[in-house]
Image (cartoon, rainbow, N blue to C red; front, side, top):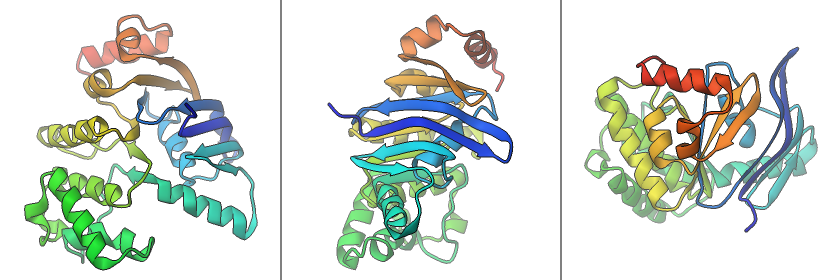
Amino acid sequence: MAPIVRVSKLDKYFGRLHVIQNISLDVQPREVVCLIGRSGSGKSTLLRCINFLEEPSSGSIEVDGLVVQSHGRGKEHRQLIHDVRLKTGMVFQEFNLFPHMTVLGNVIEGPVTVKGMNRAEAIALAEENLDSVGLLFKKDEYPARLSGGQKQRVAIARALTMQPRVMLFDEPTSALDPELIGEVLNVMKKVAKDGMTMLVVTHEMGFAREVADRVLVMGDGEIIEDAKPSTLFSKPKDPRTKALIDRYRTGGH
């Protein structure tokens, strides 16, 4: 089976800082891949390069058959990036909801304005996804009246309503109070169970252990380990991975 995401020889510089170093990575359809590593190891930058929120310095990204080379120019390149973004739903640390729109308004905004979806069709799809994250009853509320966990669940429903082929999660629970983390992780487990391809940057090792098909460990802009959770958590090969897991076990972050 052809991979749904293929990252080839990816490099990313910020000035002279080499934050992604020659990474190649394949993700299969329906696979859940968690990326772990210390802060500053390049996890979020890698995710942001996949949907071109960051322009790669070199290499190529392929999503669902669309190949985008770094340093492309012109209308065709911009269209390719637009098409890749339509295939990738993104959930950020911060929820990025429009404060002046209701929950339903936030969720239908993308399908209607970006995809040109019929409004009635968008509402039906939005309500279905809000129901799946347990928040249909909040559809007429404004974001200010939601908890952090509810806002993040709305953000997940919003991303799903764009009908992406791949979901990218960039530390989706790191801005939440501890008691709200579980409700968001439960929704993510459900999305995974429904067969969505997912790349998840996370510090939640329990989630990675339980839900991931593979765990990638990043260090200094490189993938230093790539293994099934059962192998990685019981027999880490790299001392940096071992240190990361030991810190998790002792309750550190």
